[in-house]
Amino acid sequence: MAENGSDENFEHKLVPHRGFNLISGIHAPEEVDRILNWEVQDSDIFGVTFPKSGTVWLQQILILIEAKGDPAKTNGQLSCERVPWIELIGGKEKFVAESSPRLQVTHLWPKFLPIGLRQGTGKVIYVARNPKDVLVSYYHFHKYAKMLETPKDFNDFYEKFMDGRVYGSCWFEHVTTWYSLRNEMNFLYITYEDMIKDLQSVVEKICEFLGRSLSESELENVVKHSTFKNMVHNQQANYSLIPSSLLDQEQGRFLRKGTVGDWKNYFTVAQSENFDRVFQEKVKDVPLSFVWDISDLVNT
Ligand code: A3P
Image (cartoon, rainbow, N blue to C red; front, side):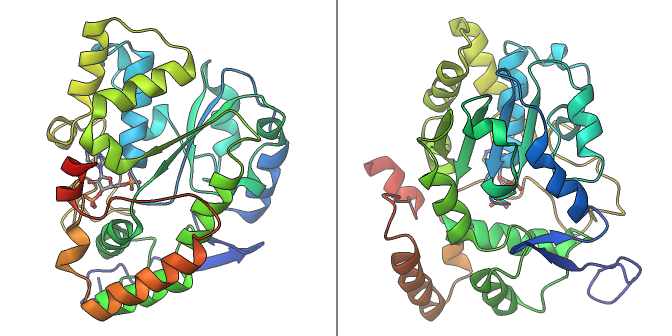
């Protein structure tokens, strides 16, 4: 083990593939290319996120909606097994073997996803999070994810994120590209901050989009079992059972803070101003806005 906690034996290397960074060892470019031709069914649901935007949260919500809020009906399966990543090596086999409704998540750009989605088959739920908090969450994740290079310090990671030299590539491109396609597929756009503000409303929105009708108490249970407080202690949902060869649980945890505005504890004034400039420039063509501080949630 190296001094910085990273595993010297793990080759943490980003592999650029058609403009998008994959991770060697867990993604195979040729398999990712085949996703385009996967046959999609109307009942298929794809959760899409840039890393650290609340993927694990969406996984838990989808599982609970299908279980009508009853965690006992989730068969003790880990959320990443019930709602797998399509881009991981072996993703196709899992996709084909899943029973309907097939639930899956991805961090990929739309150009890699099954063509059927753009023909109106299947459904996409995109979760976006204010990118300054994404950056901070991702910084911490890099410190304990063995397949990713441990940053030298926060500034080192800030530079990498701004340049898109991370898995998921450029945040700005991810969110704007996906958002621009919202009318070309069955698409629901939700934000992490809305989930923090009023989880029940967002769960209701997801149910409506998926055509699921839950009773009041079933809905309450979905919300109850997907709060940060409850997920932290739920091994099925909190990723604590992921092998230590991938996540060093002693160096960090998946459900870290779960709040809005933590970026203020990390960004310098200069980093924040630079970020705001880049954000204005790169997001100007899409009508997207974000909540940057927890106090603003009360006022929106
Ligand atoms: P933090 O590191 O800021 O705490 P992803 O699943 O896309 O990797 O995102 C992980 C981030 O989502 C982490 O952010 C994690 O704490 C947060 N998260 C996951 N479940 C959550 C929940 N129920 N409520 C609030 N935040 C949650």
